[in-house]
Length: 285
Ligand SMILES: [Zn+2]
Image (cartoon, rainbow, N blue to C red):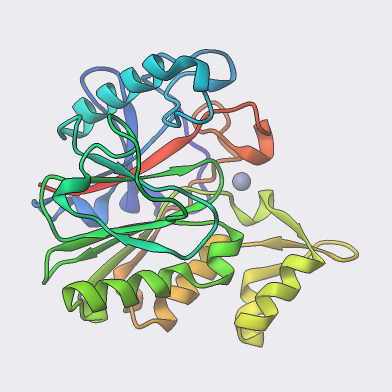
């Protein structure tokens, strides 16, 4: 499967791997060198869902009549990643900036047992054997790894989360719970919608202008006709992370667009509501 990418150095940042059972997923090169980490971002390839959900839909709520199928997709994903299929703990996304500290006792929540929490767009943990998971179909996944304290985080950052600086909230929560020094953080900005594919209206621009500096606004937004703009969520998240203290050399952006690659990735902008969800994963072995 060929991937439309936007920068020549993408292969240095992101790799498309093929696992033994046919599950294809992205992996961040920048995180692969840490042996204690497992991480990935699913594609549409390698599952059993059909129609607009084909094939690796990882959201039970998008395909309520096919719970067993989605469960099988999780089993395949677990095998491909090399994690326990009972180790997943999933977000409950509502475009908030709420972050949950995940414990061993949460294992399985969202996949094999019900979640006993709501309104959670960010997950953090420093315990081993927990696979944090969050859902995507254009919004931006943010991965965090504190290489000194051996702690991880995963966040869902759409335009609302990005505008409310979810990346900075994650860092604050990791500092509070794990004593994370922001200089030790590796942050990865995963696949999502690119600036060319993401037209927004004036109201979105105005919300950002309340939170971002003028010079940053100019690098995040490009004018696109009357009262319309093209928004770079990747650039906005780079700014948020850098402003929160993550060194530039520790921030890695995937530059793989969900909307540019509809055969490989689900995109809300391209497919609308009739689609599956991909998922981002990170775990400490
Ligand atoms: Zn695109």
